[in-house]
Amino acid sequence: MTQQSSVFTASHGVMTAEVGVISGELELRTQCDDDGALTLAITYSGADEWYTLPGEGYRLHDPRDHEVVHRILATVLARP
Image 1: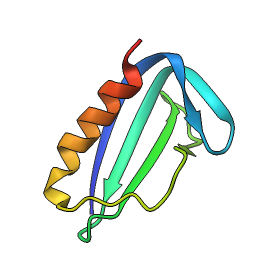
Image 2: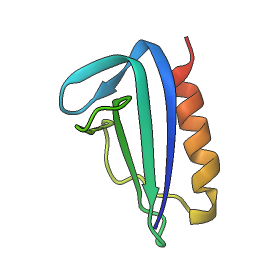
Image 3: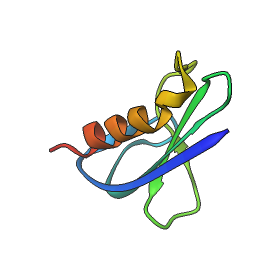
Image 4: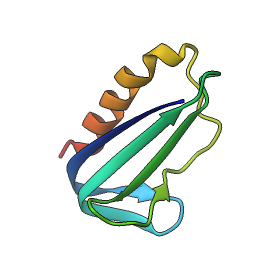
């Protein structure tokens, strides 16, 4: 299993499954197992409680794409 993490500022907010939209300085964490199953989580930077992004069953065709997909997600979530 691999894990990637990025801190970014979300001025327009990011929707979570648990608490709705959160904004400000956030941290995105993605985990990918050897079968390509992808887990997405987000938190306020420095906080202990993690939230999930809406949706389920995320899967990569090739787990080696994890780093690239993580960077794309972090960039899209950070755009104004």
